[in-house]
Image 1 (tube, rainbow, N blue to C red):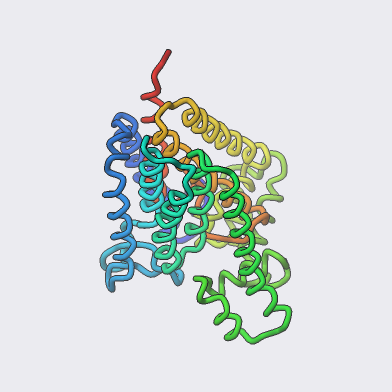
Image 2: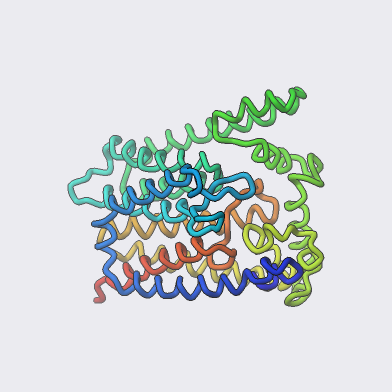
Length: 364
């Protein structure tokens, strides 16, 4: 799919699949290393990984170390070359830290203070990630943490309060975007309203396009519209490998086709049949991960497994929903398929950790 997405692009784009193959090979190696290693070592070292993750995020704001691309500084590198995306590693480090803390036998998860500690562990990296800015990755942290806290045995009442608080906050942010538009305020005022919350004007424009397809059809709404056309034009069996016109002719921008909108390429070329197959494979992956979480007797391992699976599920759900227009456009890649070195190795490491937990479940 990555190869197909870069067929009509530049030499750099057409070589994406070669780089992706190298990253996939390295990812398989990491999968084997983590699968064969005892996951308990990772849990015991959770705080070290957490601090390293925060340190790497902070380095993004050091001149000449953070690489800026498409208006965001999300990669560490030298000489303008992108080497690593710290936020992808931070997600795993945060999950390890929370699983280690809540999984201790001496910890009573029913106490509200541990929920507060967990939120703090999430907020610190979330703020740094928002400063990049990378709203999509920061949002993914929320359901992941909620799933872990819920699985730890925390009473449902305080969790419901958090849900209500989250809904109120989301409603407030939407009001900041939609009301000024309805009142025809100038762009400078609109930007001042959303800036304190880590939102940029392109975030606002994407939200507006989500609610109104005609809001900016040639700008912020272009990728969304072309993605929906690509998905719909695939029909039942698709147009054939390498024959997707929306992709090949460049209507689906080559900057996003191999990454955030890779599912559009799959849907156009393989149709509903191919898309359903991909969804079924993802469903099996999520189901097997949850089965591993329910079978292990180690509470920390269960929370770790739940957090990692929740992270994968969020990526799958948000990416595909964004592709077909059910959610606003955001930079969330599709696990195992989207182009991206750090993301690919992070996903393979995630699967390796889950496999390590599965292999160490006592067999009766």
